[in-house]
Image (cartoon, rainbow, N blue to C red):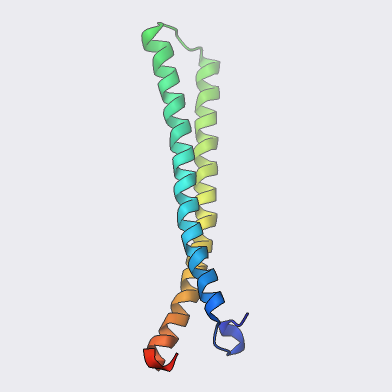
Length: 110
């Protein structure tokens, strides 16, 4: 497939690939956010249910483990979102340069 680095015009398949990549990255970010928020809500709900409904007091060690798990989960989610965001921006930039070339030449030239 042609790309902008070799000076050739990209093929329709390449446009479709980049559009698919953008859509994939958008969906992936949403999935990561949904996954992380579901786990965090479950953890918080579990702690509230244990402490309020059943009157259980969590030991300091348990609180630390829960805090550590939440920090790790949040950090992991942020890292994955950053990775996918960077991929999204690269694909978007490449696709935008192709669209700019098409706009400069005019719609009737293709």
